[in-house]
Image 1 (tube, rainbow, N blue to C red):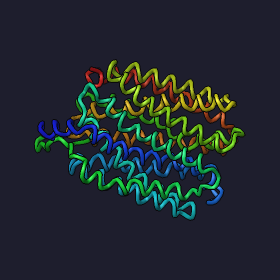
Image 2: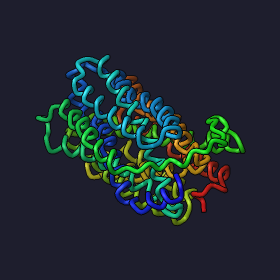
Image 3: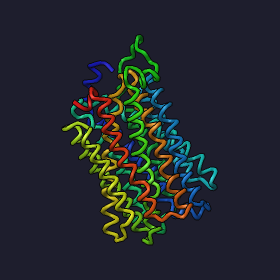
Image 4: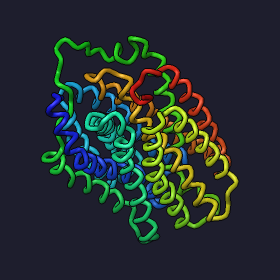
Length: 402
């Protein structure tokens, strides 16, 4: 992107952030929709706990593939066309999810939906970094990506208000129509933010990730993404079900999911602002410790008020950390490979989003109680805090630390 184009994009940054916020919101809606729909979808399709875990992870497997491919393509063809194609894909295949009639068709539909998710995410990250000033980078990324918990909360709210009369297929029909409706906005309002191509630039992704002393930082940021997403996607896919399995009515499971997402919006904005002001090392480490404490406390919580408060705390910390981490990852790589570097971090990190639902499914299948599932996942937050501190040492010259 030329300096003139960069200045123009920054002038219209508010509108661009709004459009990308809406994309993140419909993506968050669909991801949360699986967890919200699960209590009624599971018996209709005859899914066992392990099958539900695989179905919840299928979209994340597709996301891993889509993130690598989408980031790689965007650095060569531009952010805008790849983002439009990705949004169209996850809209169409969300509709296909609604028409699923068996475990096999559900798996295929969720995998293809994930391809669209994956293609969109590194492009959203790259656009946010490229339209923002360095001193506002984390806040811009957080403002854009807090659309995800807003969409997730909307999904949970619809389910709570509609009650048992809500047909699970209708949840996915709405989740498919919304992204398709956004495509005209993307075509007319989204600028192309890719830096001007440099014929002499080294476009080797392997060297971008591991060359010039970046190998340690790359491995650490991948590990931080992975652990964060183990917790996040376990909660997004299983929180309502685990609360119901504790003996509470479905309405309280949906309320816990809504509290998780609403607090996630607040956490995204607040942690992003603190990160821009003080650097990312200490705020993110504190957020991960808070996440571990909230998940451990959920294990023994039984009163509805305590469950809602701890669900909110978990959402605040995990989303605050995750969306600020999105702002850190692209700064580790050269500008002409920014989307590919971010896509690699998203793709590898998303292995955690695959493992999270699977871990919960396998633990429940083995007879673990809901409390034991929450307790088993808490150490992931502590491990992420340690990794974050190590990452800060490995990337001391990164722009996010200045």
